[in-house]
Amino acid sequence: MSEHGPAELPDDEPVMLAAFEGWNDAGSAATQALEHLHEVWDAEQVDELDPEEYHDFQVNRPVIGPGPDGTREITWPTTAVALADANRTGRRVVLVHGIEPSMRWRRYCAELLDIAAGMGVRTVVTVGALLADVPHTRPIPVNSTSEDPHLRELIGLDPNTYEGPTGIVGVLQHEAAVRGMRAMSLWAAVPHYVAHPPSPKATLAILHRIEQLLGEPVPLGELPDDAVAWQHGVDELAGEDNEIGEYVRQLEEAKDTADLPEASGEAIAQEFERYLRRRDKGTGG
Image: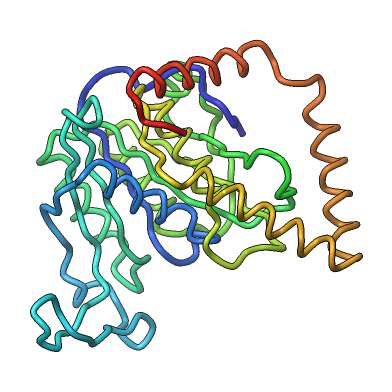
């Protein structure tokens, strides 16, 4: 699967980005990427799905606690839809953040896609993270796939060849394609030996891919520092456990062998272009 797409999405139509807690979200990398975008783009919640229709509350229990005014209230596990203004993002971006539903997946996807269509969305990007045999010391792979041959050719994606059990991310992407929408998925590979969230290095890799797709830099705040601190922490873990340390070295050797020859001119050019965009807009990183 492709780790890098050579081009951004083809026009300035609204785009939906969707991530879901649970099976599709190793290390919480995908949903934390959406939370980051919601914050830095000052997105406004515009809709939500009724959790009564889609969740088993014995699996995803509501939470009780004090509300903003001090009154105790119950927060239900729901799916929120927020809108980021084009003045901040270069185009209108719809952010969908929820928990993978327990039931009625087809109705759930239909409701989300109806909301998307009502907001003029023609492109749906699902975001996920999976556990993989990758070393924490190397760049986190973010694979980009699509079932749409036109979209694959346009921005350099690989076909989606996965066969087997799927989550709500896979179902939503498929249902969007059935409706004639442009649909694609981003998947970050999280080192399986450090699966516990957070996983800021994987979140950062997802955000880099999103800004590449949208053609706009994403303010990163303290996330790069968090990613460095995370890697140092895992380095210490590997240094204290000989078995883990040896396993990491084996993964590094396999990764470095697979990546030869070293970084292509295209990859270097993309990184330099991203640096210039962020410097010009003063977004740091």
